[in-house]
Amino acid sequence: EAQVTQNPRYLITVTGKKLTVTCSQNMNHEYMSWYRQDPGLGLRQIYYSMNVEVTDKGDVPEGYKVSRKEKRNFPLILESPSPNQTSLYFCASRRTQRNEQFFGPGTRLTVL
Amino acid sequence: GDSVTQMEGPVTLSEEAFLTINCTYTATGYPSLFWYVQYPGEGLQLLLKATKADDKGSNKGFEATYRKETTSFHLEKGSVQVSDSAVYFCALSDPFNSGGSNYKLTFGKGTLLTVNP
Image (tube, rainbow over all chains, first blue to last red; front, side):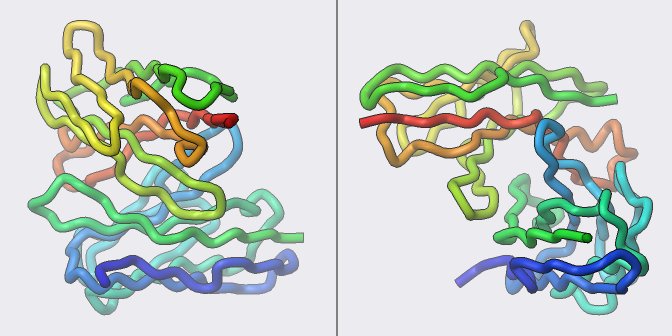
């Protein structure tokens, strides 16, 4: 089944404790992206990647890092999480030539 | 920059009622337009899309027409069901505004629809 998977689905952590949210897609998509969803703000892009080893900032990159060492994986790294990063995070992917993005199921992160 | 404005919710309807969720956009280039749906506890699913003026996207009884003259992409359904209860997001993708290198989706804030039996 074609899909985007994220892990973990739920995470409660404390300020300053480094964490990684994994994202993997099995559709051989070149483009991958991370969004955060906050009430009243919709979804906003954090980082994106056009292909392996090619990443760039989205609209709200502060406090986040990403890497793209393999085509299928695009982990989101929070080196020192803070409470304002409490949010619902979505990973997405698409083929360069197609116009549809596929989203993962989301990761709900709470930073205390 | 690009932006999407959609009807604030929540919207509560009875089963079989007619649904309209308004969406207007501002874009630099010639965007593609989308409606995504988020069912409770799930991720976003593409509901329908349109890539050029006067295109009509449709799926599962939902429709939306790309109106360039009014910069709108309103979502409609003639007869809603309880199973349509979800959050609906209008979104656009405007590669022109991101130098052609980012397929970023710009989302509206979402509209919560509740359909009662």
